[in-house]
Amino acid sequence: MPRRLPRFDADFSAQIVASLALVQRLEAALALRGQNGLLITLTDVELAYELAYLRVFVAWESFLEEAFLRLMCGYEHSAGQEPLLPGSAYHSKISDAEAALLNGRQYVLWHNVSSVIGRAAGNFRNSRFENILASAQQRLAHFGAIRHRIAHEQKDGAQKFNAATMALAGKRYRAARPGRFLRDAQANAIPQTRWMSQVCAELEALAQQICI
Image (cartoon, rainbow, N blue to C red; front, top):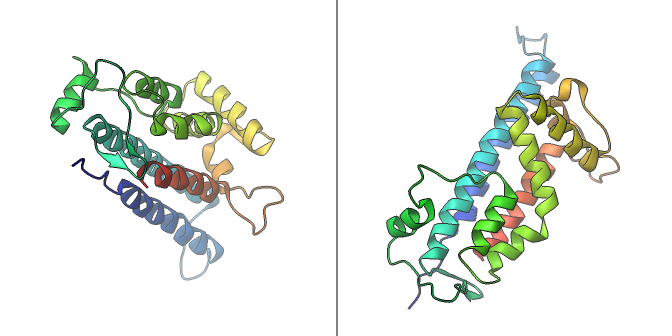
């Protein structure tokens, strides 16, 4: 009897809740700045958005890895097991799946959606995991560009971040800082929603689709 894929999406959701709570507390503190000796600045809050987003995206990468390894071991979701490529077999242990996935490397990366989709195609045949990510591939690529801009200061990262915000919000942000974008409200969104919350909601929905 195949084992059921754990609801890793619940753990991921908990990381989102904690990250959003952090920026919400700092937003409240910013509104009270100057009172009770509070010295918080807008720059502080924007930096907190970047750190909170990085925490969420690292949790997203960890979620993808944990789910993928178990799918390689034949864990099933509501639609059953992921179909293997011809000549392949499910691994009996997580450690065996990890060794096969690494194939002699120290690590594999999970932030690039195209690479993750390719990884799925190299292990499964038309898998639900692959199809779910492919359905949101362009959005996930933009979200990955935001993550990359926070983690790296290269010119290429700034250019890709600017391209991502143009696609998502229709504008660029001063100094190509992700905190300004993440704190910004979506145009015409009812109720008003900051981009941080919107991105988290989309990632959370994808995680739920993978695990159900």
